[in-house]
Amino acid sequence: MALSSSFSSLCFSIIVALSLFLVLTGPTGSAHKLHKSFYRNTCPKLFPIVRSVVQSVVSKQPVLGAGLLRLFFHDCFVHGCDASILLDDTSTFTGEKTAGPNNGSVRGYEVIDEIKSKVEAACPGIVSCADIVYIAARDSVVLLGGPYWKVKLGRRDSKTAFFRLAESGVLPPGFSNLSNLVSTFKDQGLSIRDMVALSGQSSDQGKGKKFGQA
Ligand SMILES: *[C@@H]1O[C@H](CO)[C@@H](O)[C@H](O)[C@H]1NC(C)=O
Image (cartoon, rainbow, N blue to C red; front, side):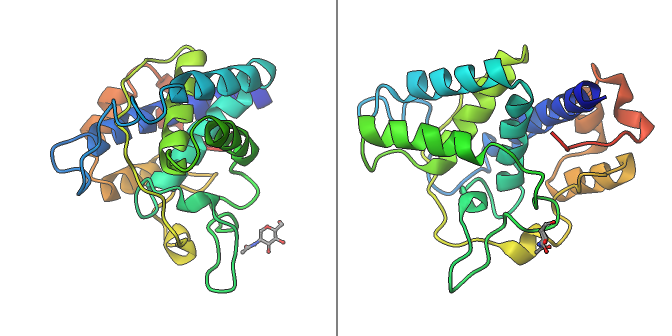
């Protein structure tokens, strides 16, 4: 039961990751230029560090692989992939962690913290958390048997969080049904055709199963 729901969640997450990959790397993407060798000279150990932490975590708890992927798209759907989901409440803003679709159900924060501290030890002040979240999501997909893709890097971290946006319906809630998911995808510029094409492998997408509770 837990296993099957984590797998349907993983399938869904892979679709979303691929969709985001298409959207985020498209020609109309971010204002500054993302590049796959962004940290080649400044943090050459970045990829091995992320991979080794993700590998050790996912080998013990595969469900956290799906969790890292969900953390990634819950970051990206709210004001872009800027790591705003990682920010705790401060005196000036409320973090996104307690927004309805995230509260108590987004997992993997501690994995990102562990990666971040190792990356900081190797190359202080260089790599954004947003990029770490993205690489960790990609590595999770690969470790769980999904496709590999080259990540483009150079995202900047947000200094504030977007609690109200996270609550506004841009994120599919844990109990999303198909029509709800379709409209969430549409809001991100993804058509039903994209979604169906990308979900061709996953026959239970159309049966109103519960998603997202990795
Ligand atoms: C988040 O979940 C906790 C525990 O269920 C609950 O007490 C809290 O009110 C929730 N926060 C928000 C903002 O809904």
